[in-house]
Image 1 (cartoon, one colour):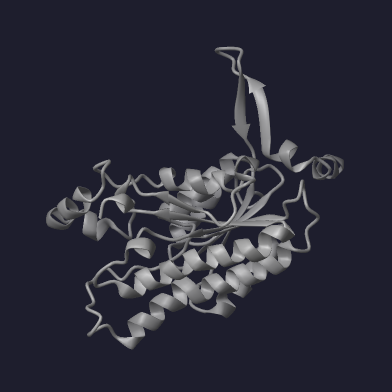
Image 2: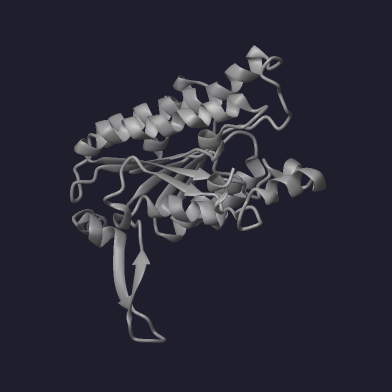
Length: 288
């Protein structure tokens, strides 16, 4: 208990960054640390979410993550991340505003607070749906998961973070995970592109409103990433050829290459970043 209280008195920069000599060179090196922080990461059992959970735990944060159905993967990730004392999984669908609000309250109940909200969950109906044929059910389902629940998460998290005592002016971090489709659009997937495009505007609105109050809101916008969600497309030779032709680096991202920027935006090194759209797409958004 005494150690915990002493840690709580550390400044934000002392909590989040440390400089130690490298054993090999003797030159001071930089180690990012989120010790003392609690992160809520949605869609955390697989793909980008699981990579983000692992990275935040490696940085010393305690993590609560949500998952919809992959219970075996979620339990394995909790154990690999230090067990329930440091990492906790909550099974909950995120389809509505109320779902998002409920998840935040459940996360606060686990570790007492949430300092970093990572809105990573989402759905991408893989079949082509021409706009003239897209069903109301698909449209509402995609926006419910990708946008409505995101609002609930942000609304409840911001209200909670505003009660925090600031560390060097910062009360909390919000990172929304969007997509290059948010900026370029995506034919036959208008529901997905519209939902992710709304997250870009939401990020900018949150920055204008919350940055003066000590909450930094930013967005990471991945391109194609090798995950279970994209596997059907990337495993198809014809589709994969078309996809890779649009990426100057010639490959999809690894999940760690998305988790890294997400972590960065929750550290003091990004302390002057607010309302930014961090593109992580191998250059794809610039060429088509």
